[in-house]
Length: 159
Image (cartoon, rainbow, N blue to C red):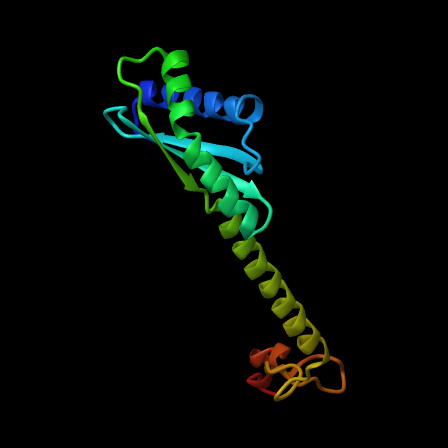
Protein backbone atom coordinates (compact mmCIF):
# COMPACT_ATOMS: atom_id res chain seq x y z
CA UNK A 1 0.00 0.00 0.00
CA UNK A 2 1.22 3.51 -0.59
CA UNK A 3 2.85 5.40 2.24
CA UNK A 4 0.09 7.90 2.92
CA UNK A 5 -2.26 7.35 5.82
CA UNK A 6 -5.43 7.96 3.82
CA UNK A 7 -4.65 5.04 1.52
CA UNK A 8 -3.87 2.89 4.54
CA UNK A 9 -7.13 3.77 6.27
CA UNK A 10 -9.15 3.28 3.09
CA UNK A 11 -7.44 -0.06 2.43
CA UNK A 12 -8.25 -1.27 5.93
CA UNK A 13 -11.86 -0.15 5.51
CA UNK A 14 -12.18 -1.90 2.12
CA UNK A 15 -10.74 -5.07 3.64
CA UNK A 16 -13.32 -4.94 6.42
CA UNK A 17 -16.22 -4.25 4.04
CA UNK A 18 -15.28 -7.01 1.58
CA UNK A 19 -14.77 -9.56 4.36
CA UNK A 20 -18.13 -8.71 5.92
CA UNK A 21 -19.88 -8.87 2.56
CA UNK A 22 -18.35 -12.26 1.77
CA UNK A 23 -19.42 -13.57 5.14
CA UNK A 24 -22.96 -12.20 5.30
CA UNK A 25 -24.35 -11.05 1.95
CA UNK A 26 -22.73 -13.05 -0.84
CA UNK A 27 -24.69 -16.30 -1.08
CA UNK A 28 -22.90 -17.85 -4.05
CA UNK A 29 -22.62 -21.63 -3.44
CA UNK A 30 -19.27 -21.66 -5.27
CA UNK A 31 -17.76 -19.42 -2.62
CA UNK A 32 -15.71 -21.55 -0.24
CA UNK A 33 -13.90 -20.58 2.93
CA UNK A 34 -12.31 -17.32 1.74
CA UNK A 35 -10.18 -15.09 3.96
CA UNK A 36 -9.33 -11.54 2.91
CA UNK A 37 -5.71 -11.04 3.98
CA UNK A 38 -4.80 -7.59 2.66
CA UNK A 39 -5.83 -4.72 0.39
CA UNK A 40 -3.37 -2.58 -1.54
CA UNK A 41 -4.38 0.71 -3.14
CA UNK A 42 -2.66 2.68 -5.85
CA UNK A 43 -1.42 6.15 -4.96
CA UNK A 44 -4.40 7.84 -6.62
CA UNK A 45 -6.86 5.54 -4.75
CA UNK A 46 -8.43 4.42 -8.04
CA UNK A 47 -7.50 0.73 -7.98
CA UNK A 48 -7.60 -1.70 -5.07
CA UNK A 49 -6.05 -5.15 -5.12
CA UNK A 50 -7.74 -7.48 -2.64
CA UNK A 51 -5.54 -10.39 -1.55
CA UNK A 52 -7.31 -13.52 -0.36
CA UNK A 53 -6.70 -17.13 0.60
CA UNK A 54 -8.96 -20.14 0.18
CA UNK A 55 -9.01 -23.13 2.48
CA UNK A 56 -9.29 -26.29 0.43
CA UNK A 57 -8.04 -27.95 -2.72
CA UNK A 58 -7.52 -26.60 -6.24
CA UNK A 59 -11.17 -27.20 -7.21
CA UNK A 60 -12.45 -25.10 -4.30
CA UNK A 61 -9.89 -22.44 -5.17
CA UNK A 62 -11.10 -22.25 -8.77
CA UNK A 63 -14.77 -22.10 -7.79
CA UNK A 64 -14.12 -19.45 -5.12
CA UNK A 65 -12.14 -17.37 -7.61
CA UNK A 66 -15.04 -17.52 -10.07
CA UNK A 67 -17.49 -16.54 -7.32
CA UNK A 68 -15.35 -13.54 -6.34
CA UNK A 69 -15.15 -12.38 -9.94
CA UNK A 70 -18.92 -12.63 -10.34
CA UNK A 71 -19.54 -10.71 -7.09
CA UNK A 72 -17.03 -7.98 -7.93
CA UNK A 73 -19.68 -5.43 -9.00
CA UNK A 74 -21.80 -5.90 -5.88
CA UNK A 75 -18.72 -5.67 -3.67
CA UNK A 76 -17.53 -2.49 -5.41
CA UNK A 77 -20.91 -0.79 -5.07
CA UNK A 78 -21.04 -1.66 -1.37
CA UNK A 79 -17.50 -0.33 -0.90
CA UNK A 80 -18.60 2.92 -2.56
CA UNK A 81 -21.67 3.22 -0.33
CA UNK A 82 -19.86 2.52 2.91
CA UNK A 83 -16.67 4.51 2.31
CA UNK A 84 -18.24 7.62 0.82
CA UNK A 85 -15.29 8.40 -1.44
CA UNK A 86 -15.87 10.41 -4.61
CA UNK A 87 -14.44 7.73 -6.90
CA UNK A 88 -14.91 4.15 -5.79
CA UNK A 89 -11.76 2.14 -6.54
CA UNK A 90 -11.96 -0.78 -8.92
CA UNK A 91 -11.48 -4.11 -7.19
CA UNK A 92 -9.06 -6.75 -8.39
CA UNK A 93 -8.85 -10.07 -6.58
CA UNK A 94 -5.49 -11.79 -6.32
CA UNK A 95 -4.66 -15.03 -4.55
CA UNK A 96 -2.28 -14.40 -1.65
CA UNK A 97 0.83 -16.57 -1.96
CA UNK A 98 1.93 -16.03 1.65
CA UNK A 99 0.59 -19.37 3.01
CA UNK A 100 2.30 -21.34 0.23
CA UNK A 101 5.54 -19.43 0.79
CA UNK A 102 5.32 -20.05 4.53
CA UNK A 103 4.77 -23.77 3.95
CA UNK A 104 7.79 -23.85 1.64
CA UNK A 105 9.97 -22.12 4.26
CA UNK A 106 8.74 -24.48 6.99
CA UNK A 107 9.57 -27.48 4.81
CA UNK A 108 13.06 -26.09 4.17
CA UNK A 109 13.56 -25.57 7.92
CA UNK A 110 12.41 -29.13 8.68
CA UNK A 111 14.83 -30.45 6.07
CA UNK A 112 17.68 -28.38 7.53
CA UNK A 113 16.88 -29.62 11.05
CA UNK A 114 16.92 -33.23 9.81
CA UNK A 115 20.30 -32.67 8.16
CA UNK A 116 21.65 -31.04 11.33
CA UNK A 117 20.51 -34.03 13.38
CA UNK A 118 22.19 -36.36 10.89
CA UNK A 119 25.46 -34.42 11.10
CA UNK A 120 25.25 -34.37 14.91
CA UNK A 121 24.78 -38.16 14.96
CA UNK A 122 27.80 -38.61 12.71
CA UNK A 123 29.85 -36.23 14.85
CA UNK A 124 28.97 -38.15 18.03
CA UNK A 125 30.52 -41.36 16.69
CA UNK A 126 33.41 -39.73 14.84
CA UNK A 127 37.03 -40.10 15.87
CA UNK A 128 39.86 -37.66 15.39
CA UNK A 129 41.87 -37.89 12.18
CA UNK A 130 45.11 -37.36 14.09
CA UNK A 131 45.76 -37.30 17.80
CA UNK A 132 42.93 -36.51 20.17
CA UNK A 133 44.88 -33.52 21.53
CA UNK A 134 46.81 -31.87 18.68
CA UNK A 135 48.54 -29.28 20.90
CA UNK A 136 52.07 -29.73 22.18
CA UNK A 137 52.39 -30.09 25.91
CA UNK A 138 55.59 -29.53 27.86
CA UNK A 139 57.37 -32.71 28.91
CA UNK A 140 56.96 -33.64 32.58
CA UNK A 141 60.05 -34.85 34.51
CA UNK A 142 60.10 -37.24 37.48
CA UNK A 143 59.65 -34.51 40.08
CA UNK A 144 56.34 -33.50 38.55
CA UNK A 145 57.67 -30.22 37.24
CA UNK A 146 57.61 -29.60 33.58
CA UNK A 147 60.90 -29.03 31.82
CA UNK A 148 59.77 -25.57 30.76
CA UNK A 149 59.10 -24.57 34.37
CA UNK A 150 62.74 -25.08 35.37
CA UNK A 151 64.52 -21.86 36.17
CA UNK A 152 67.17 -21.21 33.49
CA UNK A 153 69.22 -19.30 36.05
CA UNK A 154 69.74 -22.53 38.04
CA UNK A 155 71.57 -24.12 35.13
CA UNK A 156 73.99 -21.21 34.82
CA UNK A 157 75.03 -20.96 38.50
CA UNK A 158 78.63 -21.74 39.22
CA UNK A 159 79.20 -24.79 41.35
